Length: 199
Image 1 (cartoon, rainbow, N blue to C red):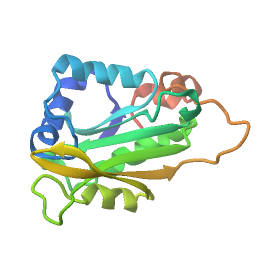
Image 2: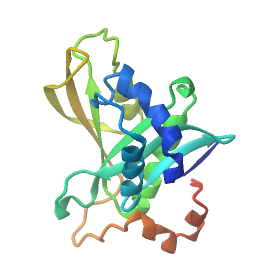
Image 3: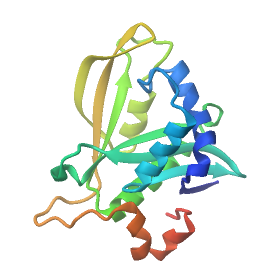
Protein backbone atom coordinates (compact mmCIF):
# COMPACT_ATOMS: atom_id res chain seq x y z
CA UNK A 1 0.00 0.00 0.00
CA UNK A 2 1.18 3.52 -0.75
CA UNK A 3 0.07 6.93 0.43
CA UNK A 4 0.26 9.49 -2.35
CA UNK A 5 -1.03 12.89 -3.33
CA UNK A 6 -4.49 12.77 -4.86
CA UNK A 7 -5.26 13.97 -8.36
CA UNK A 8 -8.52 15.08 -9.92
CA UNK A 9 -8.53 11.76 -11.82
CA UNK A 10 -9.12 10.04 -8.46
CA UNK A 11 -12.39 11.92 -7.90
CA UNK A 12 -14.81 9.22 -9.10
CA UNK A 13 -13.27 6.49 -6.93
CA UNK A 14 -13.07 8.78 -3.90
CA UNK A 15 -16.65 9.90 -4.39
CA UNK A 16 -17.67 6.22 -4.34
CA UNK A 17 -15.97 5.90 -0.92
CA UNK A 18 -17.65 9.06 0.35
CA UNK A 19 -21.12 7.99 -0.81
CA UNK A 20 -21.57 5.51 2.06
CA UNK A 21 -20.81 8.21 4.63
CA UNK A 22 -23.39 10.56 3.12
CA UNK A 23 -26.23 8.08 2.64
CA UNK A 24 -25.74 5.73 5.62
CA UNK A 25 -23.99 7.65 8.42
CA UNK A 26 -24.03 10.86 10.42
CA UNK A 27 -20.24 11.11 10.16
CA UNK A 28 -20.77 13.79 7.54
CA UNK A 29 -23.71 16.16 7.76
CA UNK A 30 -24.14 16.41 4.00
CA UNK A 31 -27.61 15.21 3.02
CA UNK A 32 -26.97 14.73 -0.69
CA UNK A 33 -24.00 13.21 -2.47
CA UNK A 34 -22.11 15.94 -4.34
CA UNK A 35 -21.82 15.67 -8.10
CA UNK A 36 -18.61 14.37 -9.62
CA UNK A 37 -17.93 17.88 -10.92
CA UNK A 38 -18.33 19.38 -7.44
CA UNK A 39 -16.21 16.69 -5.81
CA UNK A 40 -13.46 17.14 -8.40
CA UNK A 41 -13.50 20.88 -7.71
CA UNK A 42 -13.12 20.23 -3.97
CA UNK A 43 -9.98 18.17 -4.59
CA UNK A 44 -8.37 20.73 -6.90
CA UNK A 45 -9.20 23.61 -4.55
CA UNK A 46 -7.74 21.83 -1.54
CA UNK A 47 -4.50 21.09 -3.38
CA UNK A 48 -3.90 24.80 -4.00
CA UNK A 49 -3.04 25.16 -0.31
CA UNK A 50 -3.06 21.84 1.57
CA UNK A 51 -2.34 18.12 1.16
CA UNK A 52 -5.03 15.83 -0.20
CA UNK A 53 -3.87 12.21 0.14
CA UNK A 54 -5.10 8.80 -0.97
CA UNK A 55 -4.27 5.28 0.20
CA UNK A 56 -3.73 3.02 -2.80
CA UNK A 57 -3.35 -0.75 -2.78
CA UNK A 58 -2.64 -2.50 -6.09
CA UNK A 59 -4.34 0.25 -8.03
CA UNK A 60 -7.42 0.48 -5.80
CA UNK A 61 -8.12 3.52 -3.63
CA UNK A 62 -9.06 2.52 -0.09
CA UNK A 63 -9.25 5.87 1.67
CA UNK A 64 -8.38 9.54 1.60
CA UNK A 65 -7.51 12.39 3.93
CA UNK A 66 -7.09 16.11 3.50
CA UNK A 67 -6.72 19.38 5.35
CA UNK A 68 -8.70 22.56 4.93
CA UNK A 69 -8.71 26.07 6.24
CA UNK A 70 -9.83 26.38 9.84
CA UNK A 71 -11.07 29.94 9.36
CA UNK A 72 -10.76 32.47 6.57
CA UNK A 73 -8.76 35.12 8.45
CA UNK A 74 -5.00 35.47 8.07
CA UNK A 75 -4.38 35.06 11.80
CA UNK A 76 -5.63 31.45 11.51
CA UNK A 77 -3.09 30.49 8.82
CA UNK A 78 -1.29 28.06 11.14
CA UNK A 79 -4.47 26.10 11.92
CA UNK A 80 -6.26 23.53 9.77
CA UNK A 81 -9.24 21.21 9.95
CA UNK A 82 -8.62 17.60 8.92
CA UNK A 83 -10.90 14.96 7.38
CA UNK A 84 -10.36 11.21 6.88
CA UNK A 85 -12.54 8.67 5.06
CA UNK A 86 -11.76 4.97 4.63
CA UNK A 87 -13.63 2.66 2.27
CA UNK A 88 -16.29 0.76 4.19
CA UNK A 89 -14.84 -2.69 3.41
CA UNK A 90 -11.28 -1.58 4.15
CA UNK A 91 -11.79 -0.36 7.70
CA UNK A 92 -9.81 -1.99 10.48
CA UNK A 93 -6.60 -2.32 8.44
CA UNK A 94 -4.82 0.73 9.83
CA UNK A 95 -5.44 2.81 6.71
CA UNK A 96 -6.81 5.75 8.67
CA UNK A 97 -3.68 5.79 10.84
CA UNK A 98 -1.41 5.77 7.79
CA UNK A 99 -3.34 8.58 6.18
CA UNK A 100 -3.38 10.72 9.32
CA UNK A 101 0.33 10.28 10.07
CA UNK A 102 1.18 11.14 6.45
CA UNK A 103 -1.09 14.17 6.53
CA UNK A 104 0.41 15.42 9.79
CA UNK A 105 3.92 14.91 8.40
CA UNK A 106 3.21 17.10 5.39
CA UNK A 107 1.38 19.71 7.45
CA UNK A 108 4.40 19.91 9.75
CA UNK A 109 6.64 20.53 6.74
CA UNK A 110 4.28 23.32 5.69
CA UNK A 111 4.61 24.95 9.09
CA UNK A 112 1.09 24.18 10.31
CA UNK A 113 0.93 24.16 14.11
CA UNK A 114 -2.65 23.29 15.08
CA UNK A 115 -4.64 20.42 13.59
CA UNK A 116 -8.32 20.33 14.46
CA UNK A 117 -10.89 17.59 13.93
CA UNK A 118 -14.60 18.41 13.93
CA UNK A 119 -16.40 15.18 14.88
CA UNK A 120 -20.11 14.39 15.19
CA UNK A 121 -21.09 12.28 18.18
CA UNK A 122 -24.33 10.49 19.07
CA UNK A 123 -26.55 11.67 21.88
CA UNK A 124 -27.45 8.13 22.91
CA UNK A 125 -25.30 5.09 23.55
CA UNK A 126 -26.81 3.16 20.67
CA UNK A 127 -27.21 4.99 17.39
CA UNK A 128 -27.68 3.24 14.03
CA UNK A 129 -25.82 5.96 12.12
CA UNK A 130 -22.92 6.94 14.37
CA UNK A 131 -20.50 5.66 17.03
CA UNK A 132 -17.77 7.23 19.16
CA UNK A 133 -15.14 5.49 17.02
CA UNK A 134 -13.73 8.67 15.52
CA UNK A 135 -13.29 10.25 18.96
CA UNK A 136 -11.41 7.17 20.19
CA UNK A 137 -9.29 7.09 17.04
CA UNK A 138 -8.21 10.71 17.46
CA UNK A 139 -7.57 10.29 21.19
CA UNK A 140 -5.20 7.44 20.36
CA UNK A 141 -3.38 9.76 17.94
CA UNK A 142 -2.78 12.42 20.58
CA UNK A 143 -5.79 14.69 20.01
CA UNK A 144 -7.46 16.35 22.99
CA UNK A 145 -11.12 17.30 23.36
CA UNK A 146 -11.42 21.09 23.45
CA UNK A 147 -15.11 21.81 22.99
CA UNK A 148 -18.63 20.45 22.52
CA UNK A 149 -21.52 21.95 20.57
CA UNK A 150 -24.88 20.53 21.58
CA UNK A 151 -27.73 19.59 19.23
CA UNK A 152 -26.09 21.35 16.31
CA UNK A 153 -26.52 18.73 13.56
CA UNK A 154 -29.80 17.20 12.36
CA UNK A 155 -29.75 14.17 10.10
CA UNK A 156 -31.94 11.06 9.71
CA UNK A 157 -34.53 12.66 12.00
CA UNK A 158 -32.05 12.83 14.89
CA UNK A 159 -30.07 15.58 16.59
CA UNK A 160 -26.32 15.17 17.01
CA UNK A 161 -23.66 16.87 19.09
CA UNK A 162 -20.36 18.03 17.61
CA UNK A 163 -16.97 18.02 19.31
CA UNK A 164 -13.71 19.69 18.39
CA UNK A 165 -10.46 17.85 19.02
CA UNK A 166 -7.03 19.44 18.73
CA UNK A 167 -3.39 18.43 18.38
CA UNK A 168 -0.29 20.61 18.27
CA UNK A 169 2.33 19.83 15.63
CA UNK A 170 4.87 22.50 16.54
CA UNK A 171 5.86 25.34 18.81
CA UNK A 172 4.09 28.66 18.84
CA UNK A 173 6.71 31.42 18.71
CA UNK A 174 6.98 35.06 17.75
CA UNK A 175 7.82 35.96 15.09
CA UNK A 176 6.20 32.93 13.45
CA UNK A 177 7.48 31.56 10.13
CA UNK A 178 4.86 31.83 7.35
CA UNK A 179 3.12 28.66 6.20
CA UNK A 180 4.40 27.12 2.96
CA UNK A 181 1.57 26.41 0.48
CA UNK A 182 1.45 22.71 -0.36
CA UNK A 183 2.29 23.07 -4.10
CA UNK A 184 5.55 24.84 -3.17
CA UNK A 185 6.69 22.12 -0.75
CA UNK A 186 8.27 20.04 -3.51
CA UNK A 187 10.66 22.90 -4.25
CA UNK A 188 11.98 22.52 -0.70
CA UNK A 189 11.64 18.72 -0.49
CA UNK A 190 12.45 17.12 -3.87
CA UNK A 191 11.47 13.64 -2.57
CA UNK A 192 7.85 14.80 -2.67
CA UNK A 193 7.97 15.21 -6.46
CA UNK A 194 7.12 11.53 -6.86
CA UNK A 195 3.79 12.16 -5.13
CA UNK A 196 4.42 9.16 -2.84
CA UNK A 197 4.73 10.00 0.85
CA UNK A 198 7.60 8.22 2.61
CA UNK A 199 7.66 8.69 6.37
